[in-house]
Image 1: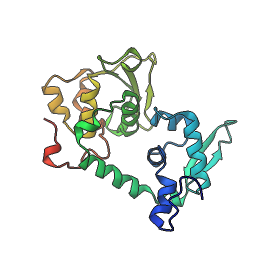
Image 2: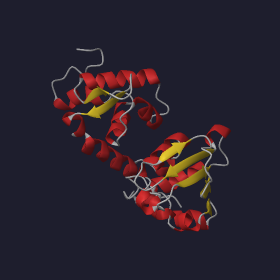
Image 3: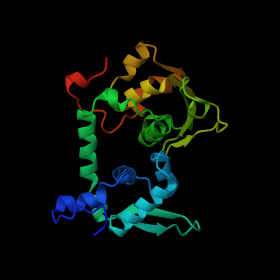
Image 4: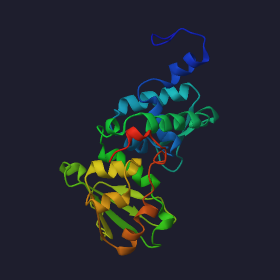
Length: 236
């Protein structure tokens, strides 16, 4: 038995010993979302130390929840993939997200704004099939943030995974998306709508008319955005 053991034979207790360590469920969220490499996992968990991330990956490997596989074409690079035991956790992680969206006050969640995490989530949910066939470069601007978190560039093209840059990639920008971080987070979480934010002057889209007109088609929201919170939770 480890020091952190509940010392109970109950299956709930045994599962909790594996899954309820700090950051473990969020790491599983990233793996279930498709992140497979260490650096991709770090971008989805920007406040987790690299040492703790490595430790949690080892623990999940020991528990049989994931396997580590070297990438043959890239020396020293590994990918992490969930086993059957890991994949079976999907409904558990998703149900926790649904519960959090429904029952944790929206105002409380918006105390934890994180531009890096938001834009990484936005990147992997972008619907490139609803965008022009050519490459599109969208610059997101959070004017109130510190310089390091003020600008992000999203590069998208049909048939390819969208790319996110924290530095100017040198391409001509097709669409500028300007909003404060709270507003874009509210939109992402489904607490307010794109139309409402634009009408209130909290979201501005400048540049390509096509990209601006179809923004609500290709800017896919959080997978939990459609979950209905109790009426008292809703933001104005």
